[in-house]
Image: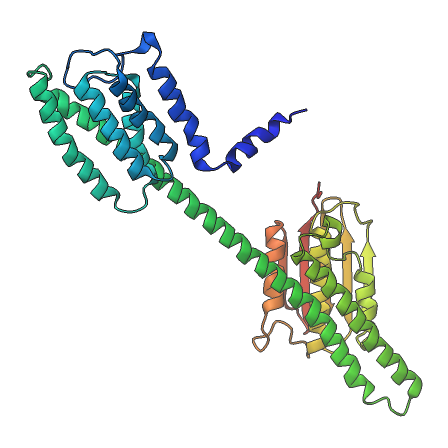
Length: 385
């Protein structure tokens, strides 16, 4: 059974010459329909002449070159012009004369180089043809008639040029959209790399530094080194999930980074020596779109900053799941907190602000009264369906 929905795709895959050939064959067939003979373009008002062998040549020269009107527009117009001149000079006035306008339009639309020179050349060639037809027709056609015909042909060329410029603008628009999409994707992946690598490596560095002072306590040293190992494994797992984003062969589930692991994140930070109080309110919705991931990244970045700039200071994490939004608050006490200070890159917080803004939420980060640092985000929860 033929799937007619695939016909347009199969047609577009054919060579452009094959796709243009039916147009030429259609004009060729219509030109020999008895009722349509001598009903074509009339220039010069020469008497109609019955078709003969030369008429077949003139009609073929006007119709068949349309097959290469997009691949070889100059050759197409040259052959069509010869056939059109022969058609008018002999007085056949066949329907094939319409192909002349199509050839002119094709030059304006598909000729890449020297379009203006080609237009001037065919304009110059039109003058002797017009003069000859004027003489042979004994002035039956006024000069104004020849001028109007030339204006009509020039208008067809202008339409072709306009179509070409429109296609060029559309191609440029698509190129810019594709470039913007690639840039946005690279930026998103850079943020993910920053969030994953910074958090895990920071935790490993802090744990490794703590292990240096535990040589007299083998049990605690072993526990600290085990934490470093576990953190490294989690970093590798997260990086694999992130790199799956670049692999088009993976399914949507594989591409989705792990979310909903805030408690694991808190426990990992505690093992690194950071006292963290965790509170979670409400029940997570089954489908929240990207909100769950963004909430996870907010907690991850805030805890990373706490480890880097306020190690050992009490930290609180509060996640509240509402019907329409997720609220995240992370606060670090003590005057030693430097998160978001001018000395840091600020890239993580800036990236979080952009992520939350994209979802239509609110994000704030800054020092709170009495010292320390506070990060708060309100993230609308939308269905991913």
